[in-house]
Length: 118
Image 1 (tube, helix red, strand yellow):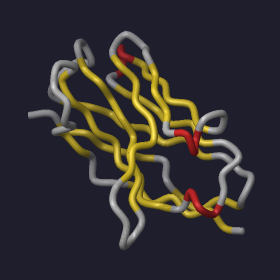
Image 2 (cartoon, one colour):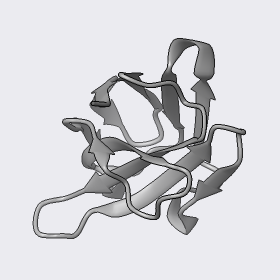
Image 3 (cartoon, rainbow, N blue to C red):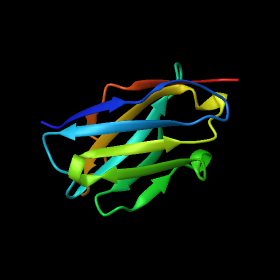
Image 4 (tube, rainbow, N blue to C red):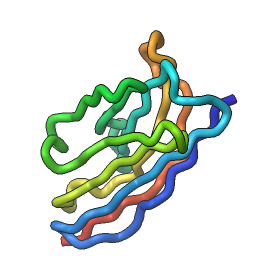
């Protein structure tokens, strides 16, 4: 069973930066896709970014140029560097994983709160 654990959330002023981390236990990143999602109360969870085990990245339009997803396969950890944060980035951020051949993410972390003050 794969377990994902996020860390690095918190409170930051608009324009600031935070780095989220997600460590996986129970498998390696080989043939795996890692992603970040976020959710605010009353809204659906939305995709933020993903990275494959080969390093191919994908971003939602609203974070391009501000957020960077990366991974350290040796540490089974992947990251979301968030720069130029805006109050509308306030949400609970979740890391997730799926086998590359699957379309749905089936492993999720517990979530970490990110709050951006204006």
